[in-house]
Image (cartoon, rainbow, N blue to C red; front, side, top):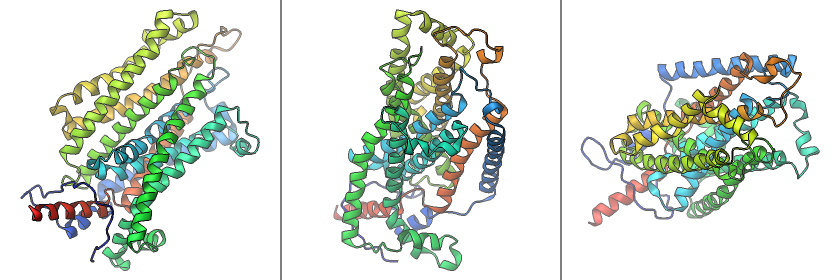
Length: 459
């Protein structure tokens, strides 16, 4: 296969054979990066995810047939673990704009091996962010009423609009850079041994690799990168407005937009770090996802962690200083009440400990980075749960003449099954993506390798 396609010159990004420090050949790059069959561990992992998804589907069937009474949500906690999951998925989805758009427009080319990982995570997360909203509705047949009878004054309509727009842009940012790789996948293996040959032909048969095609494709990607940044900021700002426009203790804040966005970038970066380590180890991609990538991503995570920590201090310090009566009850519940363990767990595990790990050079090695990334993601989920539930349990008017169950909230097994099933569903989409598509852009890697070889020859 003779790859003679040309694209806009880019700064070289070296890919060396770790054994002899020589540049990796084109054929070796293709063989290393084409999708691999699942081994035994891959099949076990996929089976576990499918089981969780089926359990979630069964729980949702019970909710559809019996109503929201199967949940523990009541008049006060009408948003529970479902909305926590929604905010969590929206947060992770912002990683697409961080890695793909911001770093690409900033001419940061070391991020090339990470762009597709980020976009796959973004698309998977935004799919389940949309689905979990339908689950939370209780009457999904009324979903179309949002479009048929929506009011522009409602932040919910703004949320539906920006989520749909963000999903389409993310899908295109995943698809357009994939076109040269699809041609490679079509030519690399015979159709008889390539299970996904027809899919590759369907998605990329029109791609011939002409100069004009590359020019149009490159320009389109740059336009999408510019577009997705304001849309990404809007999606989480609008999500924060769903809370901030409600006059409740803990939500009545002008800081919520920046607070949500900074947290979203942190958890998204943490998710990419976890994916980097897993794919690097499982698919043996040490030559492509190097320690340099972990070093640079570690510095990004530290920066985002410090930024999010600042907004957390701002979010709690000012209400604590003024100590209005309703805010006082809410803050006491978080700092020393029934939610204190979860709150301090989210603060220390989700922010402080990862920052202390990654601030040192040894902490930015792959394994410590992986541990810190998991801590960031887990802490972020609990942080979203804390944003939703404690506030709903602290209305301005005291709870009177209601059953005791209305004054507390802990998700029912159906809620847990649906929430865990949605998380497993997002992981399942990522798993199928990496089985079908190259995790690392093949063509861009070859071009950068060729540019590096030409540079070495010229010297």
